[in-house]
Length: 72
Image 1 (tube, rainbow, N blue to C red):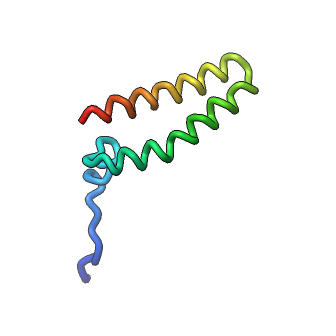
Image 2: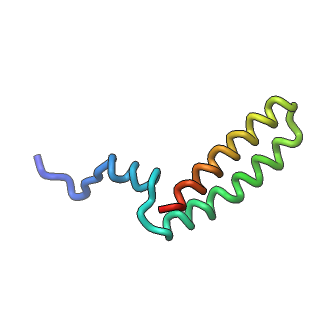
Image 3: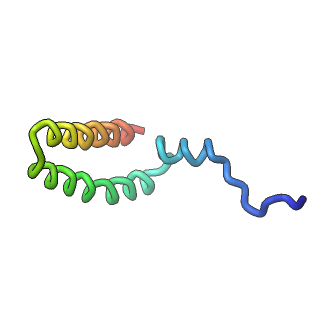
């Protein structure tokens, strides 16, 4: 059986997504997540209080995680 042409190290790929090595990747992630956070928070104002707090808590948690990762 022939060897695959492209080999992917899934652990390295996952680690690069979770803890990016370059500022370019962090910038791309911020550019993608910024509008998603704004949309989620804006949309949550139409929901009930408990659902609104849950959605805003998820956004705040992921926002804080992004800020913590920027300290590399």
